[in-house]
Image 1 (cartoon, rainbow, N blue to C red):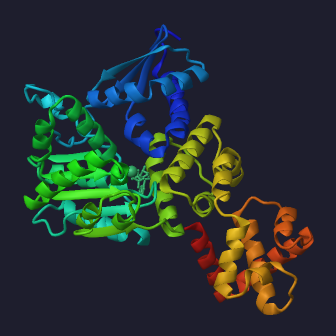
Image 2 (cartoon, rainbow, N blue to C red):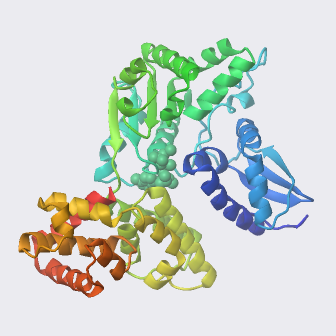
Image 3 (cartoon, rainbow, N blue to C red):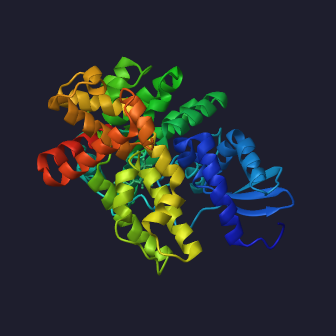
Length: 460
Ligand code: ADP
Ligand code: MG
């Protein structure tokens, strides 16, 4: 490598490194810490990494240096040192204003103000957020908060599983608020960052400054608040900050991966405060929403990959098969488009299956044959033992065939394997059952609806 490495190559290595790192650090930490970074150069064993804030590079170099070095090494970029450069990206949106890094007797420089807030992702706007049944309430509430005006519910508490759009909505609120009220001090940060800053303030004996800084914001947004559960002094500080801001009529937006009442190791009084405003959940995506998101992402990718050819049915296939979360869906689409553009080929169903085999498999594994059997038995009100056992009466036989059909559709198990799980039946019996349901499905509306419902329940 050395000098003259072109940006394309850096992007390529970094792209692969990011995928590896995401697996190592987990999706949430990845989004918070690694995603905003960019590898700019590798020279004589040093990797130069651009970071939007010093705070971020500080944290990453303390916590993730080893991982980054190892991954780069494995990818054939032998480095033994990381060098971070702080670069404010001119194309970034109105940055969430943030208090300075709490430092004794430090002047409040504008540059330092950026240090505390997490950078906003440009792509996370209301315009780019696809609204469907599972997220319409959360979206409406977020819009309302972003409009400003008198605070009607405080806090707005958004919760839902990973990758369902919580962070996206929070960034959208931050951005929109900043556009509408340029003077407002909007502070967006993850609970992990809140804790980190607080611990740092304790260590540096600057807790008074820390308190002061938080208490001058107009809108406070804390992402993934479940993170501070069990961390007593941080919880305590968060509680005080929260109360002070609410008393002053400042808007607070919180997100978590579960409802306030269900956060373990969170103090009761905090839980009940968190429930005081509006609590809305983002439901798991449904097929329509996934398809809508895929269509919208495809439109935006077309700019990046002009001349892209997409066979009919590919997006529908993905919406059916990748049900875990939107982040995975997006990643799959991105990989598919990159692959197709490299190969200069049309994206067909075959290519999709080949290129995304690992993701498709991982999504399959989510539903087990046992779960399918249990849901189907429950739905048709038959005993699980009867569903699997030898009874031939129609009231049992039909649900059994439906379970076989779903097992074939929703898992990657082979027919003989499925047969074994259905009381040791032969694979031809399974094949017959699957065929039978396929036929009935197109003729019998209510059966088709039943199957869709079961599928949705199992995917949720
Ligand atoms: P969470 O914070 O709930 O884990 P994120 O907000 O980080 O999830 O969303 C994960 C990814 O999915 C992001 O890239 C986000 O833009 C995208 N995403 C989620 N929901 C939607 C949606 N309704 N429309 C468009 N993109 C979405
Ligand atoms: Mg998030």
